[in-house]
Image (cartoon, rainbow, N blue to C red; front, side, top):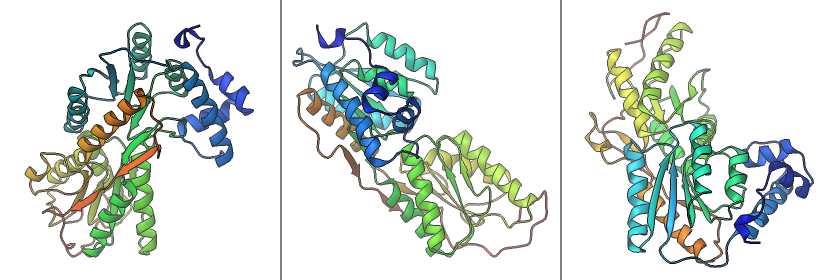
Length: 354
């Protein structure tokens, strides 16, 4: 039997072979807590064994590789596409691009199509698949690399990311060094590993400095400007309603969020950095042109994408990838959106402090 003609692997098969419950398999695939390291390894080994058993022993000339993103209409996605395309162009590899647009039904459709046409490998770029969809993809036996993975990473798939923890530490410590004591963080989605790492680093630095994070000053949302705008307005309103001084600084988990913060502050007559300092994360190409130029954490998105593409080609060639998780360095880029905090004035419910 050809490897790809074998029946699909199900959650039940993985659970039975690993000797665990369906709930445990789901926790491992989604990266949720409550599972011991040894059990995580056992489940991951079962998944990888099935993946290897499905992998063909040879590859046809002229590779066709799928790149799956959550979106394609952003500067962040453009950097991903440019990075993988640079590598695939030089290796005569054809790129098939698909986007989920945050819709799980699109993932199912993409998997359906993947089973009806040739494909030599997949790059998953910050896109969320369910545990069943991950197993369905694994049952194809295709080499897969995850870029900035969503959910669990213990599924036998090499991953490429950035030093999100170190970057968030640098951003938070920069604000504290500027004299800020009232710092809020607008985080990304709770399901994305990079977002979790940045939020955890923010909490750790604030705790180490002995600085409180009031309720509502760590807010999870999306990585886009609409979320940054919405969450900033809610942050200001909730702080005022609670009789708290507004934050003197906001650390946004992405540059797009930070642009939403800019817009929200402008709508309330607040100036950056005179009234509130802002730090972003990504250092996208247009970030230096914002007004004022955004202080941000640079993560090498294009280089990360190129490394993911090269890693996938190595997998296709049958190489073993060690280490399975690679993180490229981040660095703080200080520009004009951060400064020492302005003096605090009392606030009243329903009004923003000025």
